Length: 68
View 1: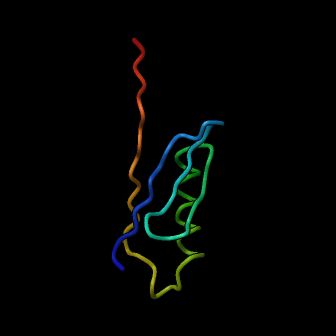
View 2 (view 1 turned 90 degrees about the horizontal axis):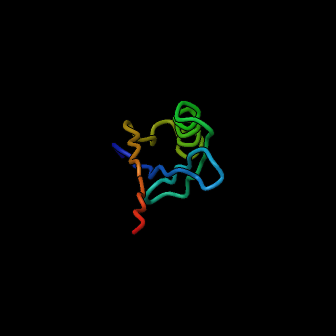
């Protein structure tokens, strides 16, 4: 596997969440730096060393609500 993609969203209670596409990996952090660290840690825990993806992509999802 060359790449794994995480969807990153703002949590309702604050902070950020990250969910991997196609894998059962979920983590969260209060700041972007903390989230990056936790994503790397989660990937390391989920995969064997020789099976881990070389690239971790964070895809930021931002919802914007407009009122009328």
